[in-house]
Length: 464
Image 1: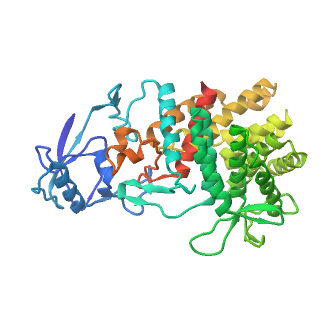
Image 2: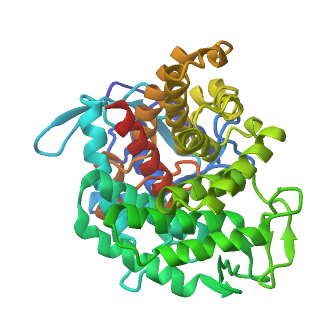
Image 3: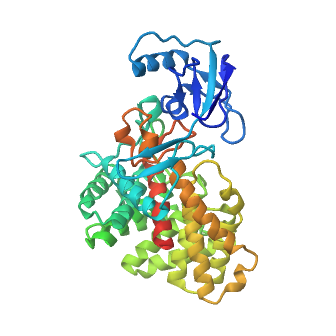
């Protein structure tokens, strides 16, 4: 303990800095910040916005009392509103029995989390844990456990077809990284379950079907993309060809989403009528990236033609303003297919650099932006290597690279269930290896794991 001071705790409290609070001056009832977070003893006001407003947190006195009685092994605890409270800051270390880490006691988003000693190795170590965690979320039938709110002991009961297939894709990326090929059987099981339960065939075209809890079924352009990506990635890793047919059937389904001018409708009904012409900015980038991976697998000219038509449409309609990691992926693959296309390069650069300052200063982990940064770094290297340096003149490439490295390490530390974080939650062994959204009850969902894994793997593979 570094220092302490007494405050008067009324119905609302904001604890700033590190450490925690104690309800007695001898600190027998002290709670560390992560104990408070791990059990959600302080509940922020509904209008709270991370990094923008104070939390004005309401204190759950009865839950604190119950916890302290269990922790301390006695019933002589009664915490109530109006009690005097001491706040304190701390310094600490954590060991797994082999290594010792100092714990951060200064940065407000990293308090109580290890200070990286060997970033390269520690990324590798956690990616191994992350792959194991995501694999373990696949049940015996192939369906994922969708996610948890660990601080309130809740298992998420809803499901999402886009995230089912995108999580398989990320798991396959992780298996490629760790070389644990025995885990491919879980990925294959999940693919088979998804094809059986989340798709339909109409006129020899395969569509992913989303069935909301309420309302009619939906066919999403983004789900088509994620299905194709997962099927192609499985064939890339295993060299098995059994999923090539459904991948091409899913490609045929893409045509049902296209309008006459080349624009895509985003969401269809199961009878292929249009439900939403637009749903979210990511879908076009996703579908181009998916088609580029399908083309790499099949070399079918019709796939290549649709990639080019779609990219040309995106250039003409300024999709570079969207700051979308899928566009960055798509442009990188397109440069490999179409060569020295300056229009695609210009769109990719605008897409990345216009949001760079915002990415740099994000308080919360932002894994999709790490994916964007890695793709952008690759893109700038390609542009330089092909003699198109003049396109880089308006942009600060050195800052891009420094933000890229900073955000990779920041993402790892602010979003990973390291043991020193997980040990304060219910069932910590179940959480280690997962990735969380701190501002949403420390939620860990399969798509959280997906984006963190993809972002950190792509960073490591290109950086090292």
